[in-house]
Image (tube, rainbow, N blue to C red; front, side, top):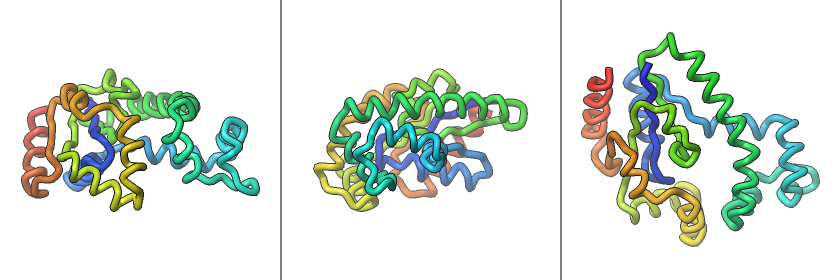
Length: 192
């Protein structure tokens, strides 16, 4: 089985690439969904409440407040990551073990693939990329955030140039979808 990581900065189109790959008939796994499930677990919320009591209002968890807190304070982000990363690592290892004999290719759609050092599990890395201004426009429009908030998010992510250096394939997601689809098909055929 080949493991292919799909990554890129926020708003660069990695989820768009993952969608095309899914339509081509492949499974794509995204740890963001694992994290969403984690926030639904009462045991995990107890840990969050203990570590970040300020993100609860009348006993109710406010994810938006947590997001704001961690993007305003890198120490708080590191603390949150230290709670989440072990869980994600266990889920990834279980996924690889479960699918090793069932699928020819396992695709992982992971924004922080390189930051998590999950590239060690990958045979190939696809980096979704786009011009900086288009990236900013996409994120501000999609997430309804200010340029200041966008800049805070970008500040804690790995530089796009470094991600491109780690790539086996770089795909410009500003290109027409049919061109991107052809690039992905060619890449998948080569690795199979």
